[in-house]
Each structure stands twice: as C-alpha cells, then as structure tokens.
Length: 152
Image: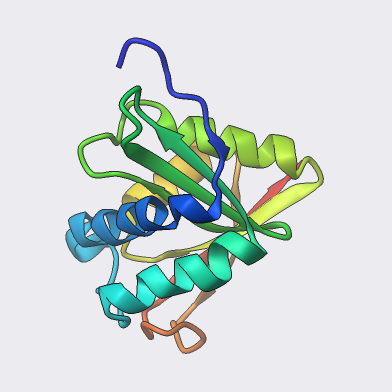
C-alpha cells in the first residue's frame, strides 16, 4: 500500500462491502471475538437497513475499490471498527480511530470483548481508558466485555 487510503462516508450502495468487512473480520478474529449470533444474511440486511441509513459510516478502500476498513459512529459510540483480514497492522485502524476522534472531539466510548486483547492494546495505545467491565449479561453473545472511553 503505497499511498494510505483515505476514509470516505459510506453510502447505501456500499452496504455489501461494509457488511463483508464486518463479517470477514469477525470470522478471522478466531477466539478473540465470540462467534456472531446472527447469520450473514441478517448482518447484511442490518447494515443495509439500519447501519448505513441511521449511523455515521466511514469506509476505507484500496485503489481498486476493495473495502479495507469500516468505522461506524453512533452518537459518541464507536459502534463498529473493523479492518479486513490481511490488512491489519498497516495503520488503517489508527487512521479510522483518529477520524472518530476528530468527528467526536468531546469524547468517545466503545465496547470490546474481554477476550479481544489485541483490541484492548489498540485502544489503550490510542488514549482510551477502561471505564467498566461486565460479565457479558448485557450483550447478545453473553461474553464478558469492557467499555473503554476517550475523553477529548
């Protein structure tokens, strides 16, 4: 990747690409993220009917238009932040979280699973702090999670 891709606002036509990044990234995470409880078709429909129309969605693509990273903001929440398999460690996630900070300078919060230690290191490195830990009873996967906050 010679020139770093610049994120752009996703449109409804981008819904399939956004959904594929979410699905493939989660699958590639292995045991770091609990398996999704919704079939892929439900995730695709949710992205098309809920996420793109109702949230602030940013998409990073390579020069050929292949989706590499997705950031979804919902109020002051980082609702989703995923980088496509094979493209982690290249600064795409950092670029997306910096974009989130610039869009929400008053602060951000997000959840990550307790098993996702790579995500925890990433958010700590980017100035987030642990605000709360849970036993997972409040999420669909019923997996322990951690709420991180960044105070702008």
